[in-house]
Image (cartoon, rainbow, N blue to C red):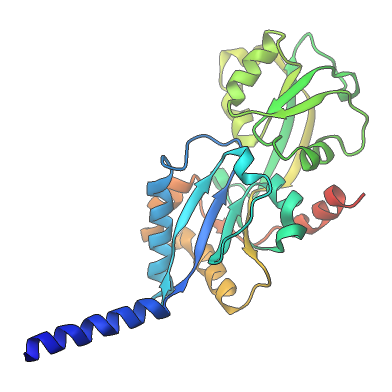
Length: 269
């Protein structure tokens, strides 16, 4: 009888603890990036487990990955969603609507800045004002922000469209199927290492762009600051390196102050 009572008490205490546990869900929103929600599940679980271990008792963390443009467009957070790792375009187009507050920045390849380039075939135009046809890129699903970031008011007749395969876009440009491709820094470096690079030229570079930010939904309080510190400390934590490798970043840095200026530039009329 005593053993049964002890077990019942323990179960009751466990249930009470679980009931009090605060949900801290996160989402990685990267329209156009490779993979699927299920492919990314191990990485999301690893990050969730790491954050939960650092937050300690009283918190449960769950994460998911979304790269479907239709699901990221008009995205609405759920009740427990607190944290997100988003693309630059998503942040610029949704910061005001969702009350996004930057907590940190990603560091792909160890860089704290990104660059977008328009590449066209050697026989293509030398000026973006002369580009006719389609430009394709993984970051172009957020079309309003992408247009303002790329062209900064310069008239351009090109039609931009999102795509999932940057290398395929480059090959289509070389074959005359589209006008050109838009590549971020990682994509550009990968393409430049291939033989087909000799048939390309860069007609526009937008350097010094912020990398994808980590954001908080709503006003950031004590919990947000605590999570930000955990993220910033991952770069020097040996237990975090496998998680970071799965996320394809070399740690997290402070929020990029350039986000505020870009938000004004890309959102205000």
